[in-house]
Length: 166
Image (cartoon, rainbow, N blue to C red; front, side, top):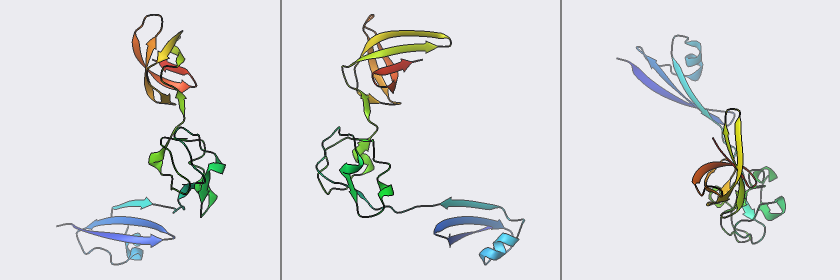
């Protein structure tokens, strides 16, 4: 009968977990486990760097694009980087922590905006105007009405007021 033993090691702040399967007794130390070549080793390694929370330096309204001057933290300013250039989904008051749920990619297409609608299939490229029925950021799918035919299509946002359907 195979016996499974799990080791959890802390090495330089990284945590590793290894499972050993062996007919005999499992190794009793990490050094012994490393020298036994006939054991299958399954390891999962995860590293986390704890950053100080990012707070609003002043009252920020929903839809605002974040700049470094809008943010404050008690720790390293590296915590700012993922937030700069993002758009707030909801208003945040001064001193409140800004979470990942509060931000998103900037909206490049507003609802009811006139957009350039492109259809691409191989070497064929057709361009026309459409009306965005949804707001969207880069990579999001939005509904667009072709102004010529009044047909509603689903297209991907690729830039400011530009969508493409394939």
